[in-house]
Length: 139
Image (cartoon, rainbow, N blue to C red):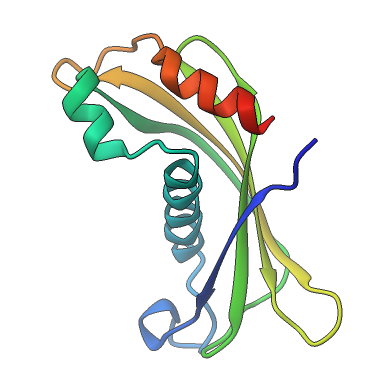
C-alpha cells in the first residue's frame, strides 16, 4: 500500500481564533486543499475535468476528530489517501500532523466522502473511468 499524499502548510493569523489557536472549521479548508493537490498529483485537475466531462465533486459527508491545538506560525503536514471508492463516490482519509523536531504529532483526522455529480443538475453520476484508473495506479 503506497504512503498517503502529503502537503505542507503554515498557520497564519487568518487561520486562528480569538484564543490564538486554529479555528476548528479551518481544518476543513486544510483538508480540502490537500485533497485538491492530491488529485492534481494524480493528473486529475478538477476544472479541466468539469469542462471535459460535465461533472464535478461535491462533499457529501465529513467526520473530523480534533486531538491537539495548532497555533500561529506552526507548520503542519496534511495527508490524503483513498479509503474506499464506489461507482459515484469516494471516501478519503485525511490527517493533519504538527511538524516537530522529532516525531510529527497527529492534531486532527478526518474521513471525507465526496460524490461525483452532473455539474448542471447536481444529480449523482458515475465517476469517470479516468479518475478510477488514476486512483487504481496509486492504490
